Amino acid sequence: MKCPHCGTSIQLFSKALNKWGRVKSCPSCEKKVKLAPSLKWLLILFIPIVASHVFLLKPYILALGIDGGSFAFLWYVSLMLLTLRLDNAEDEGFIYSKF
Image 1 (cartoon, rainbow, N blue to C red):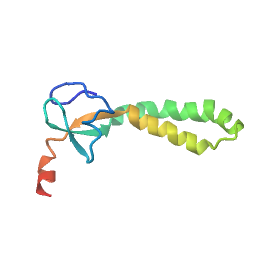
Image 2 (cartoon, rainbow, N blue to C red; image 1 turned 180 degrees about the vertical axis):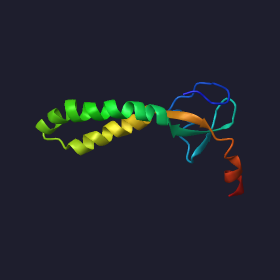
Image 3 (cartoon, rainbow, N blue to C red; image 1 turned 90 degrees about the vertical axis):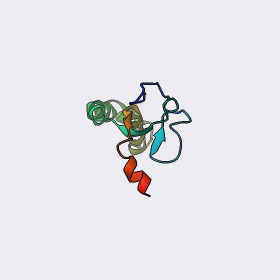
């Protein structure tokens, strides 16, 4: 992922992005950023992931005796992780500075 302010690449599992709170800061420019799912990519990837789960993997999973719902949960969590992006949080700074 790249910082929306300076364009520096930031890893998803880096120390800067795994701090508590919704708003994080870029390690190079120190401006506020937040993690948010990309709605466009979420909608594009949703149908293929659901179709592959229902038609390809679910029969094999049920044949092995594993619950299909728990495996679907893993698919949806991976979908959310694949669509995460960094957004500008500088516009929302006035909300957080009041509290």
